[in-house]
Length: 189
Picture 1 (cartoon, rainbow, N blue to C red):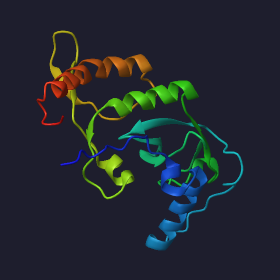
Picture 2: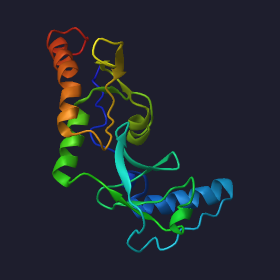
Picture 3: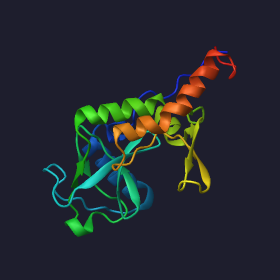
């Protein structure tokens, strides 16, 4: 049996629509075609304006949130449109997206891609990334001496997490997993 290669990049809006704006246009057209909803987007070809949103990585995909709804974003074209509220508070205009500086962003992506996932389900890389299940977990104490939580080591990152935070989260579980792989404990050689 041949090993299946996991998705080895962080998915962005460009993977869904060719570019950040392409993704927004594609979603606008899809909502109109499938649900009969005409979404007004003003000044899509202009620079985004208004209060910026923070980018984050969820399940190996760059997204930003508004109205508790995440939409895909791209660090090479930091533009955001919410298809939950239609950016009404911003006059239906796209908003800017804040990403970490490029060197930090690339290190965040590199570290997250070290985390092994089961992304066997899905017909495309995009489906596989979104449905991936973490193969490792990290034990975390709620407070010193309190209950220990076992949390999945997903390919996710929040803006408050530093590169060092990510390293600390995964150092022990990934080190143990790699050792077990070398010893043949997972049936993969």
